[in-house]
Image 1 (cartoon, rainbow, N blue to C red):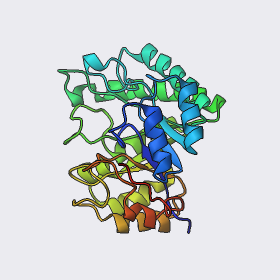
Image 2: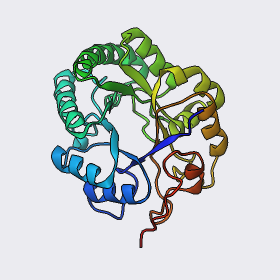
Image 3: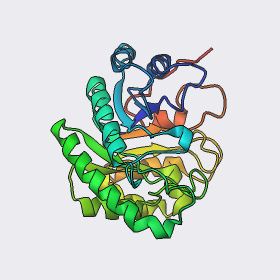
Image 4: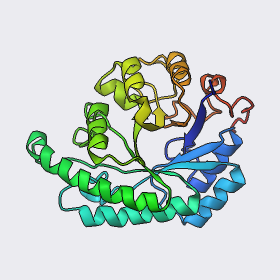
Length: 278
């Protein structure tokens, strides 16, 4: 039974530092062995790769570009009429993943169009998503990369997001049927949408390529007050044989500090983390 490995999501952690390179350095100094970035595209990939190397970090996850944020886009994978833009964004993500040595790309599904009825457009959006995922699987396979599907809760975080439950994501993965497409399990979103985390972890873990964590409902550190019993959940992941990374995608409740002791107790790489930010 291997201990868990944690990665710092530097799009969320170390917010007191203005840029991704500085956040990567802070993550490395805090004891993390890996990092993930939602959207690295404002930085040159070579600069990020150099910052990660200097910090002693592996980059383990990036997202595809979100699209036009000013128009409310949050991913394009399932959005009708945006297939060409999705594929352009995929090419950019692959370029960054190769430069960063990053093996996984979150293929963002996107939102139900403004004003549309979810039930009325569900079939069309799924068809678009399946087509885009089959294309993405082929592109990623050429570079030995893995694509991930992440359900995002529609009760609190993003009411219009198309992909919102592990059941929906697993069904889509089955329809696509490509081995280099996997499930991204964010326990924050899964708890809000469905609960039953023990059962869902055991059922869907064979499909999971990456895990993310935050406390519910405040999205703080795993050891902050909330609904989730993370000592139990981390032990469950270990007992079930999970070997991937656990991304720390939480909102620090105070000025960023070293990884919570709860993470260090379950980690192979954080036992010696003692750096305190001034």
